[in-house]
Image (tube, rainbow over all chains, first blue to last red; front, side, top):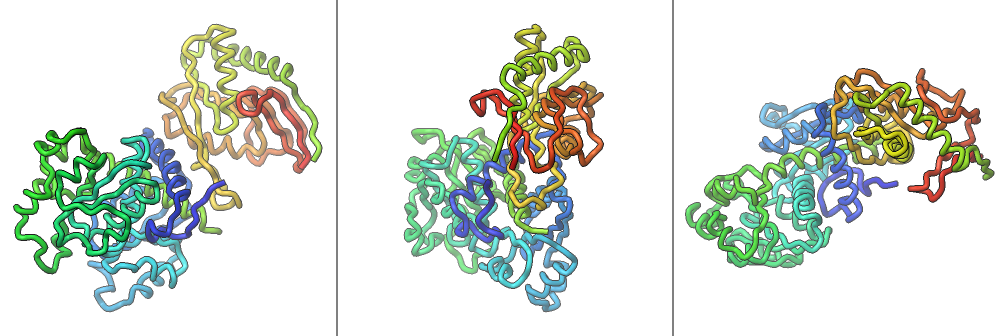
Length: 309
Length: 179
C-alpha cells in the first residue's frame, strides 16, 4: 500500500519519483470526481485547513480553496493585508495562534524563500507550500507535469522548455525538479539577464534564441514577466522583450512540428504570448487550471491521510 | 492458517444463474435498471452477472457501472493502512433509475453505507437494492440487508471469507480462511 514519503509538501526537491506517481494516480480519481454532477466527497470532513497568503494570489488561492471544499474540509482564509502581521507579529506567533484554534493543515504563500521549511520545523501541522518567494511552487509544477502527462501520455523522455523570467520564478525551479525526476529533458530560455548564472548546474540546457528552443521542444512553458519582483531593469523595454521572447501564431506556424503551449497564469496577453496563441488549440492553459484543482485535492488528501487522530 | 472450501466453481455457476433469474424476476427487461459493481471486488461479480443476463437470457443494453467508495468511507485516518482508490466508471445518470449494488461479501455493511452516499453524486435513484454473493450473518454494524443473496454463512470474527474469480485469481471459488 502506498503513501507519501513526506508529511509536508515544502518543495519538489523533497519528493521522490513514487510520490509523484501516487499524487498523479490519486489526481486521476479526483479529476473524475470533479466532473460528476455532484463534485464533492466527504473524506476530510473532520479536517480544518488554514490558507495563509502573505502575498497576493487569485488562481492558486481559489484553486486550493476549491480543492479543500471539494474534499469537505473546513477552510479558514487569511491574507496578510488585513491582519496583525502588519502590527509586528512574527510568523510563528501568527501560525501558532491559528493552530490553537485546532487547525490540522496550513497552506502558505510567503514572499520569503524557505518560509515553509522554517514553519514546518516550529509548528505542529502539515504544511503545503503554495509559493515561497522565488524558491518553489510545488503544486504548480505538479499540475504542469500532470497536464503534460494528460496531453502527451507521459512526461518521461519529453523535451520541455521553460521560457522567460527564470531568475524570479519559483514555477521554473519547481518545474525543473519535477520534470527531471520524471525523466524529462529540460531547457530554459530567456534574456541572459533573467537566467541565473549557475542554472546550468541543475542539468538543464540553456538557450537564448527562442526559435531554436521552440524547434527543440515538445512543450513550451511560458512564464510571466514578473515586473513586481524586478528591482532593476533586466531588459530595455517590454516591446523588445516581446520581439525576442514573445510567442506569436506566426512563429508557431513556422516550426517543423506542433508543440504544446503552457502558461501558469496570469497571462500578460501580447507580452510573453499573443492572444491568438493563448486561445489556440495548442494551448492547454485552461486544462492546467482544471487539473490544478484535482492535483491539489490529491496532495491535500494524501497529506491528510498521514495526520493521525 | 487453515482454509475450507465454501463454494466451488460449479456451485458458484449455479448460484450466478439463480441470481440472474431473480434479477429478471424483479427487473424484467432492465430498461430502467442499472447494475453497479462496487470496487474493487464487486466488479467481477457484476460483470459476470451482466454477461449471463445478456448472453444466456438475451437481455439487451444492460447498463453496468463501477463505483469506487474510497473517498466516502468512514475509516479515513482511522485505519493503519492508507486507503487506495480505484476507478469509478459510471457514464450514465442514476436519476429515477432502479439501482442494484453488487458486491462479493456483505460483512459489516459499512461499504454499502459508503456506496449509498457515493451514488448520490450521480443523481437520485428511484430505488436501490443490494445483491451479494456471500452474506455473513451476525456481523453487521449497520441495519443493512441484501435483497438478493448467493449464500448465507455463519463466520466468526477471526475467520475471513475470500472470494476468488477466474479473471483475477485463476479460479472461481469461495474459501473460509482462519486467520
